[in-house]
Image 1 (cartoon, helix red, strand yellow):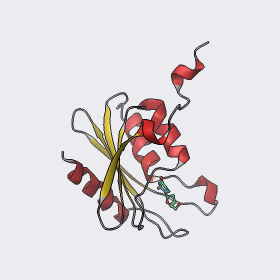
Image 2: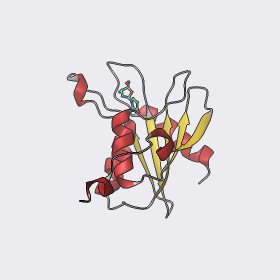
Image 3: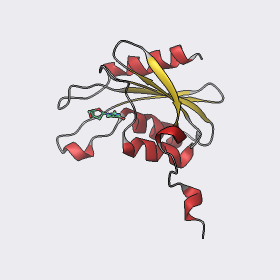
Image 4: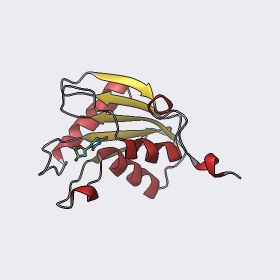
Length: 132
Ligand code: THU
């Protein structure tokens, strides 16, 4: 699976986004080492704080299907002018399972940038931080 193909899988998830409040669909596609891809979309809620982002939808699908510790890359696709960088909560949730994860952040025109999660969340707090 190429980066371009993974980004396209993320964009395809806009069809399922539930975004009556923001009108801003986001899609995500998480690639594992065996080639499995877990996709996700944002799902909003009338109680705004209960909204879940596309990345966390994909993350929870992967974890709940037994895929942990084998993540390579996550593509995140928005429709804005700027690249769709993951929010703080998503960075933290991803860091828990894959601090070395590669992130492809795409914008509305289909262009995307590749960064490492450690660049977006330097000195993150993770499982090893709890060691006494
Ligand atoms: N959103 C995501 O799905 N992922 C992000 O990392 C940024 C924000 C969603 C949440 C909400 O449904 C909409 O984008 C506007 O904030």
